[in-house]
Length: 207
Image (cartoon, rainbow, N blue to C red; front, side, top):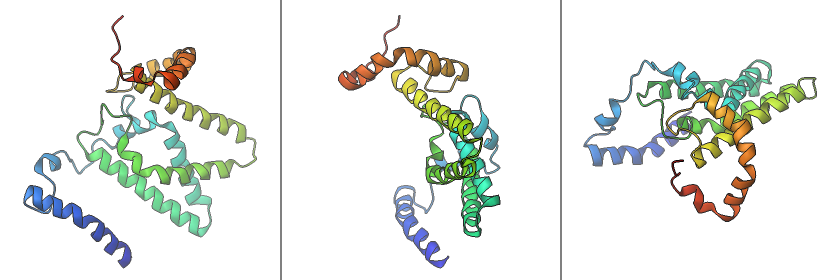
């Protein structure tokens, strides 16, 4: 624990010195601190908002968190400790993201503040796959995981090609484009990606 605390302080030191040089004190600017409401009023929205929610943008994350819960209940003693720590990390990230007034991160691709949880979610996803094993749930769960992966791939393509509103999700429209529009466009998109990549950076012309 002492080693972890020392490593944290050493890692934080450059940031503190930068704060001192820029702001005159060892803390962030008031322009940043005023964006925080420490009661986390947006914690539920940051997860479930139809327009900006983490689980709507990335449903695979919700499955991964279920996996962490399974691991915390059924794993070995060591695995349970790891899962409990991972769930605490998830909860803290939800708390922090839900406390920021700019919680929507509109204009970004998804809830980018949750990127730090990637390795934690990988553990949870592995736990789901291990729990399913060779049971009768194996095929349905594999299909569900594939569907979640395609959803994010489709959103990436929609975001990159201008098919979606970059300020927010529109789940019904996004789903239609994911499962109808993009399969129709697949040949032209593959061609553009391989031979005309600059076309993705040109502004779309109005019809």
